[in-house]
Length: 406
Image (cartoon, rainbow, N blue to C red):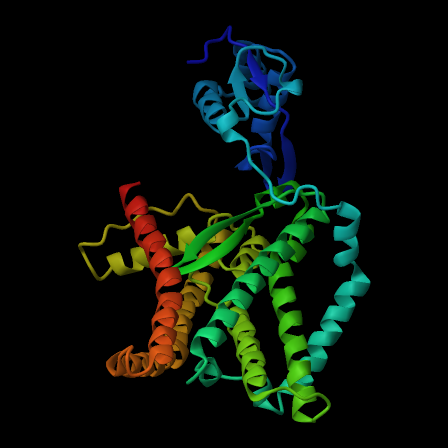
């Protein structure tokens, strides 16, 4: 409870104008909020040592209305922006050690990060991608297809290699986000999460709220850029192999083609806009929609409520008109993204699953004694598929249960 005589300690916070609001937050905790400019003014006055009553009187005098400072300061305290009392917060990193945001690769040299994402390097990357597209468009085999992910023999070696290469590529993808953010002087962190039932890595880029809008795009798109460059290099290898400029064994060529197809699918997956992909964050940033995905889900649920009485509608009138217009447009992309994901499931995942299921079933029917290598090969391959999917599925289900409880 904040009384009129209460003084408040305001922790140093960043501020970034964002249309009519101001994004404030603390880099140490990774918490950022959109507040009106008047809220920033209140915090600045409190930081000067004024009491809650003095700040309330100044607000009343300037705007002709009273400010509900008790609720406002309660929220600010929960978010770690303020703390009761008059402690010296200029030397205090955070009010609670549990709120400290632990950043990864924070020691990565910023000058090196800037060089890696400098204009000459980016121009070279785009040229590389353009040349690879020019090679691949007339010759579809250079990027492979789902059949290139099926290996009738040497399955344990092939999928072991592809699994390790896939996780390495995933790490590099997220590292690209982190390094691009570091080029702006922003620290980030990596983590393990899930997209539906798929196990994925992700980078927390909440620190981008501290920089102007136009500077956020490169860190958001850095992962896709690195994937496109990596895939382009594999296209060059396959192009050289097809013209006999370099010799690859049959297995090696198939592995390279499978990796190229994996990179293609990784980029294609970014267009599944019913989840928070890199492209989703780009769209949300362009149109200044801070809760675009959740608001779109509510909007679609409201459309269902019109025809299904059991579905309860939610009032969205408080959302600005321009943002509501974007939500309507994005709802089409949301549905299209689900259909796109279903198409990928039926055209890639299911055929590959059926092909491998048949192959593994034959190996298990044959038995260990008849073909020890084939049996062990099949068992280990089943583990490769089963373990990541089980972890991802568990995270997906637990996330749904947690959201339902909330």
